[in-house]
Amino acid sequence: MAAADRSSSIVEYFGGEAGYRCGYCKNVTGNLSHGMWAHSMTVQDYQDLIDRGWRRSGKYVYKPIMNQTCCPQYTIRCQPLHFQPSKSHKKVLKKMLKFLAKGDSSKVAGDEEPMDSHREDAIACSFVLKNESDISQSELKPLSVEETERVETEDNNEEEEMKKEVTVKKVESEPPQTCVDKDSAGSSERSNSAKLVHTTPKPGKGADLSKPPCRKAKDIRKERKLHKLLQNQTHSLEGTPSQVEPQVLLSQNSKSKANQPKSIEDFIFVSLPDDATHQLEVRLVPVSFEDPQFNSSFSQSATLFAKYQMAIHKDTPSECGEYEAENPPSGPDCGYGSFHQQYWLDGKIIAVGVIDILPYCVSSVYLYYDPDYTFLSLGVYSALREIAFTRQLHEKASELCYYYMGFYIHSCPKMRYKGQYRPSDLLCPETYVWVPIEQCLPTLEHSKYCRFNQDLKAVDEGCIKELGRVRVLHKRIVMPYSMYKKRRKGPSDEASVQQYASLVGQTCSERMLLFRS
Image (cartoon, rainbow, N blue to C red):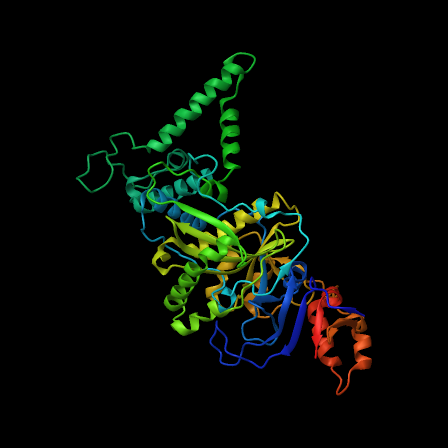
């Protein structure tokens, strides 16, 4: 036996709660979950818990009862090291750049949902996240929009897709009688009804086929650049120019470009012009009132949270006050723990992303923002920034290589947007192994609850094996459950402890302290 160690996680298990209202399908009693109150929590314990389907909301840590709840919630993680932004993601990034550079505030089509819109999650991290980390706080640099070089050219892959779309649209819009493919004209006889008319059309009636077709200036510039490159490479090679195959050089050059699509960093770290309309700065602030930046910005951040909750979630002012009523949270010992990523626009906070930096991942907890800036799609933008931030942290801590986005809820179409951040994996709710989302979607179309692990013989490798080894905190004394069981008076609580241990797993049950009165 020993006295309680302040560095240990201390939890109070509540068991499976009665059904309550679901925020997704609005079922009054359909939402079912197990829960426990975390008086303190280490980052390693929380990392292991989310890898078993748990998630925190302030001090409350909960795990959906997957095979019973109305809307099964699958833990989803993205692989930032292999992430490539989609076309819609690039639109949001370009939108932000245009706004910062020129003040353009036109709306982007196809805005996506922000990360988990649950008010409870915004209560930062009220419990202590502690860990002996190799990352120092000085290494957790905030992201800035004024770094590296300006990106000069558009993504070649995107350009090729745009060219294909233009070609298809031309073919669809032009009458078949006046448009005949050259290759098909030489290989097959033309229809009698298909005649080429070389007369100048009336204004607005189509292209003048007696003149050369118009070409895009971008295409002309590209051709000149390739031609110049071809000449330079030809003269630099040994032998005569006739020995060089032009098609080879052209294909090599195009391949090298095509294989290097734009990354998120190419958009985020682009340097703004000197006369930019706005300036954006992203500050990483530890969630601790002992931190000067967190303390000085708390009032502004809390006001923004209240504005967001009332405008987006229709809360009353009294409900929003709960955020300020929280006990002052403690920050991390080192580089791991809970942080706010504050988005400062021209000296004013317009958004706050609450994140947990854990041993193997950055976990997105919540985002709240100024509703006046909804047109910037800050939910999507902040998620992309957090993915880039994860890659930045990975350079210092090689094991930190995942970005957890909370829960993926396939039965709620509104929450499927998280699956667009790929490559990503879903957590099997029975064996707790990660499965690529592409393999999970077909089964989710047929059943809202699924076991993703196709190996029917596979079991939970971290399941409880020795209940007596569960650590218990009783009257400020730490002891194994086997000893506590002998001392306990009154009815047996073995069923509750067994359930707790099976849900948190053997490792966490032997490391965390289960509070018993």
